[in-house]
Image (cartoon, rainbow, N blue to C red; front, side, top):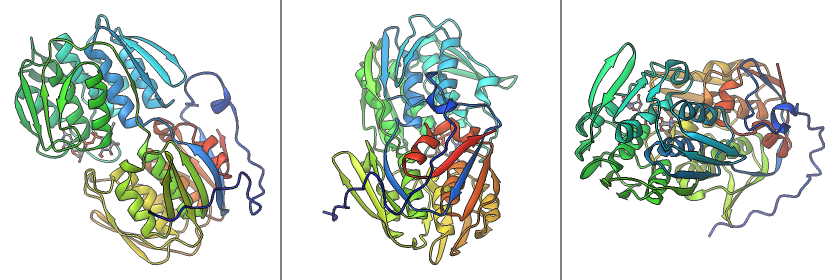
Length: 453
Ligand code: UD1
């Protein structure tokens, strides 16, 4: 049993600062806090963090679970849905398909009594690769789908061949036409599918499709991510028969129809890990309410190796960091190993750590774009293929930097909090895709941050 970290005082005597953030994006009643593509975050770093925040629902669980609404004609209610740009994009896509969508803060009610359009257009898919998650449900329920190919993205090629191969094994006929995946099937039939690599959304797409297939489907080499387990729980609540989610072999017995249900989205483990990394990089303490420690094994292990005291109690994670972090080495790999979505944030904390950390990225081929921006803050990083070697420096210095993708933005914020002086992070729209009320939460931890244009 780890020693309990003393409770974080509401105000720390060491920290007196005027917290400034522009309220419109956060304070208005509108459901989404996306403030346009040219927003920037200004962060005055170099001071310790202290405070308490509540973790939001997981983006990567909410997106497939919302897409699962296409599988039933009944009402499907989803709670703890984060207010994010990617969620807004998914709801827009579902509405275009004829799904009735009502949102009341974190609760979304969806009813797909008839699917009137089975197309996901390029304009939406290009902004969010996870749009591919409608492919499986559409073919299974409506018998056809036309989904734009996501194409390459900033962090790598990211093809969808495994989604296609799996749906073909389930009996769909698929062709690529004018940049679209066009899939058709009268009724899918169960099959044994072994994916060539572990794919999270691939596993989710095939699992959703198989719930309405005729007979048994076995997915081998399935992704074991907690978000897959959360989706399986939502589908089971709708009447799906799924076993083995969370292992690399998922068995689904198809049913004739799914029914309405209510499901609460799991806490966001990547958001949790991002705030924990920020405390380790900047020093201080925090309480993260609603965090799911059991989904963060590899990340918590590495944060403790860096010197953090972490204690999970009563559904909250408490972290305390009183010294400069020790550098940690890591290798990204599918769950339960270290997540690629936390790689950039750990790179940032290694930048100010004592020693040398080696970071190996094995999931995506081009996920080091944050390195050049971190170097602008004074980081000492060298890259050799898929390995980055970070020699920690005592202090980073604030500078203007540019976000290149979602988790790269998070790493720049972690670094900016640890850096002396002001950092302006441009193109913060990447951050708005996946972090709910980031500035408000940072401010609650005592950070000096505000949004500008
Ligand atoms: C999901 C997550 C993303 C995370 C990633 C890896 C969501 C919405 N997104 O993305 O945040 O970074 O898992 O944990 O859940 N691949 C193929 N062919 C395919 C599918 C994947 O070659 O058909 C490759 C990809 O290019 C990549 C690797 O497999 O190199 C893993 O990708 P995948 O797990 O599919 O990532 P996503 O599901 O897109």
